[in-house]
Image (cartoon, rainbow, N blue to C red; front, side, top):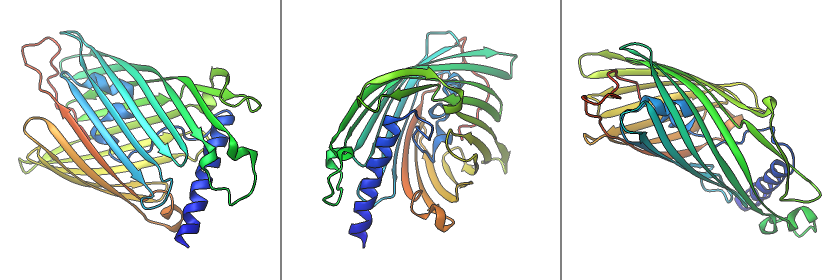
Length: 320
């Protein structure tokens, strides 16, 4: 039974990738993360402006573990401020494999921070880059049925743009980001050749986020946050997150997603500013059981900035 299910999953992943690549993209086209709260530039380019020193984040996500063709995503983001200015530059590299399809995203982000007053900041960000998609449908097990769909190889490069705005102050942040600003339309009769690239509002992905932290009992922090998502071709979604931290070192928490999954997570931050985290996804209803069970690992770092620099941020921004 499991072998049959694996074959069906592998074939379905190929068909899904084929449909996505040969029509105008109107469905979710971005990686699915659990620990985005630890490194918010993953979903909002403007959040890079909340760092006043060199920073970086790496997420590795594996969903539907144990099944052939299950999605595996690895995303890296590294950056830092330019001199003593309020400009922050960073670079991103992501690779996603699902079934017979591979996609690599790459980009550069520029975020500019505006100091509203001593305690309030506003950041604007934009990311430009591209994605390389490669799908080999000859590897799909079609059950011995001759189908021209599974004899093609699709390979193309397409530009990408995302942007955002991010407000933060001591113990609070709120942001709005938009991804997938550009959508590509492929020619069905000549696979792999882009017919046009356009900015289509109906295919854009919107993210609204907010988070707060409360200190209590001297060494504890409670950090709730929420994420609202509107992804083209999918129902409106939201995440509700709760995180506790002890002595700015040990953290643990949980999340609930409206798609029907729960997330349990743990993390630890070393004195050098390095954070490691782990999360496990669990279905809370049968509808989400097949699609959203998995594991995720996070590794990040943040170097402290000297207080005598002109771009020093004197507020404690929640990193969750």
